[in-house]
Length: 291
Image (cartoon, rainbow, N blue to C red; front, side, top):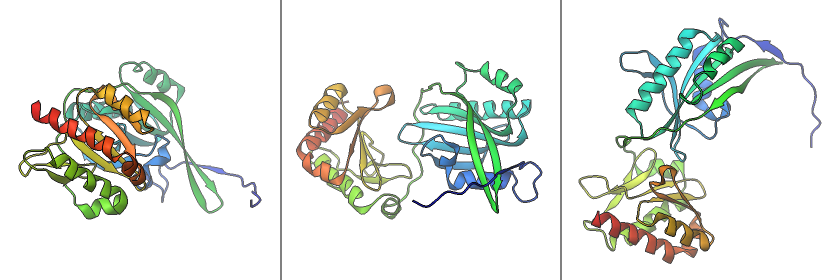
């Protein structure tokens, strides 16, 4: 292991800095949202226009956990208008897409104790995370250190969001892998043994669903990753199916609000449990056609 050397860091203030402005900071977060310390998030949009309001700096999502984060950035010290905008944009997005869990995220270089007390009044009513940004200069490098000074998340769910934009198979091959995508390919003929009409894979930006030629039929959907794939299956007796799958060593859980069963498998695990997964998928087809 290489020896580590001490280097003194100097505090930088980005507000009014000639090179590192708010757009530069947005770019860094958009490139890698994980630097906020909120998990493996993906960028949905930036400078997102709000109805009868301004623009939301960043909208981030954790699609596996069905969570969205409305992020407002302010260089310098937090003020009242910044807090109000952050809450307003959170409320607009929550009303627009209420199926997801939404959380307002306030990022500022200086969050004073006064405003922390004000923000604390919202706890239990508005899910809100406050993050203080510390910009540091070490030699010729700039380091961004994000520290959560308030963390509270409250759940919301009401309606179903419209389907996301379509993509294609090549998009998913580049995002995941050929092998995990082939698991979805192998599931399709199992589903089509009972499905009427026959279904095809429908490649959306955030998941792969099912399509009958006229409309989506997403009682089964897939989210491939590099080395494994999530299967989301909507069927009756969800708890019994979770137990049966777990009893053979598979990773199976109920998603939030118990809407679907989520199975996480590698391509090898799929082959090892192909018969049981096939039985589960065909049970979902029967339930869907009877509903």
